[in-house]
Image (cartoon, rainbow, N blue to C red):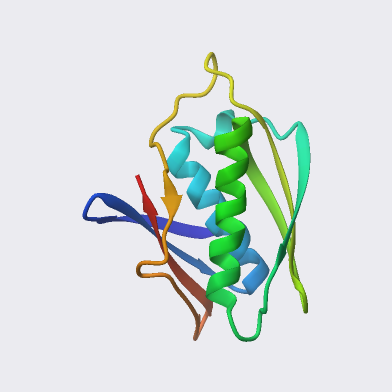
Length: 140
């Protein structure tokens, strides 16, 4: 599990490193929610949600990451669903992700940033000597 943030004008960047692509996608999702909530450890993994995202892993892995993170952000925006743990399976048709979390509770959760959108600006997914790396800019 490795992700870090970096400043990017009025936005926030996430740099994610992982040994394999499923871990990269899971860590990127954790990074987004660590941007949203001040202390992700306060999120109880009492609910499970399955997400299916269609995409071409071989040709457009960056688009698949964008769509995955956008789906998760939409779940937060529309349902106030905070997510903390992710299991990702990549298939020939795209992605099946299981996410675990709970509804936002203002008594226990302090929001850190309002993430307005995942952006294509600077979006990068690449193989490295140690596995995979991604960079994602979120509009805050």
